[in-house]
Image (cartoon, rainbow over all chains, first blue to last red; front, side, top):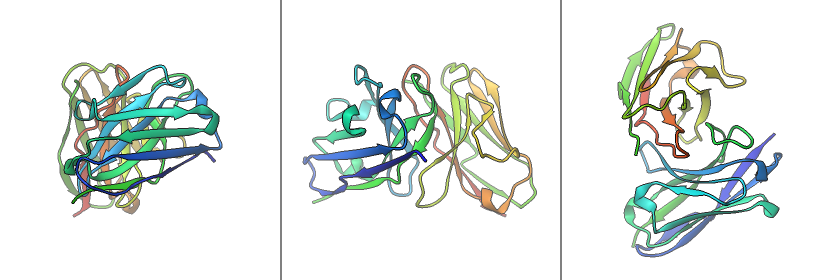
Length: 121
Length: 107
């Protein structure tokens, strides 16, 4: 069964950095667009960023542009989110997810369990 | 950027009720719309993709319709397992904003 597992969350001070990881299993990771989505406590889902299968294209929501960088290592079946200049409003559970169609950007069919990021002094 | 607006924000219903949730896009998204169900403390689950296609394993009481800028998710006969929060999401132009969510509560 296809699975995604996030790691790397934790407590960080405002202005600090954190790198999230997402490891995939039981599917050919290099065939799929991958996405990060976040959810602040008690709030709705926010789409954050995505990356094409070969890493040649990245897209970001406006409020993270210039601060967050999405990347992937297909040899390790891993997705990353480097988060810099963190703010209190970045505190959320961060989910990685897979686009459901191999080779095409589509709806998100496989989700990880999420990793919590707390930005606080 | 395309904005997604859901209504209502909260919906109170009883088991067996027919429930409809609306999602509007700020501009045309063609057929590039999905619906998700989320329960507290869990990851979202894909229900419907490309407006009306049921994801594998999802009960047939869930259905989707619409085109362009207005879309609906319908649950034909609400079951106890359906009390949850529902989100629409577009995936046009390699982006993917979500609606703000609709919480379906027990009446």
